[in-house]
Length: 250
Image (cartoon, rainbow, N blue to C red; front, top):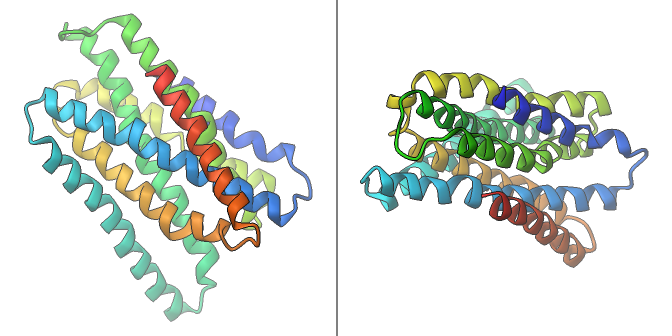
């Protein structure tokens, strides 16, 4: 139920594309910059920071686990980027648009899988009477992750709309990026005793993938606008909103 709640909020965030009609390129560039800011903030407060805390609690070498995960996530998308470019050139596919769409969706999905596992872990830990595991803390965690998923849903659907997708397709792929959360939440609850040692690496891995997409695709696209300084401001706004949600909701 908690996983379905977080996915529903992602769905609501993706639905923001229905409120825009005949949007000018400048506005879409601004929204692209906003999405970049959201993803940068989420990569730290939703992924890297919890990964460091978990690694420390599990008596791991935190900096090494986080580094390996973070760099691994970025490297995977780098290799995927090169592989897709090779395939596109061979098949004469319009590379840029399809590649951006794939990378964006893939990075958000990677981000949502460990978040779902964390939710499942929180509720599953109650069944095992693990230290600090309470129903209130698990519900609060699910609520926090759910509310931060609203801008994440828009971070997928808005750039897809920018790429020329119809509103319904942009919405569909936006909400689809969050459907992995209830699935991975069930998995996390089932494997609660085994999954906890993998979570720091998985969280960091997702963060690396997100940062790669932001630097490689989203920011360069938004900065192609003539008003670069204004686009940068929207990136700061997106970052600030996501930061406030993550910090305030823990």
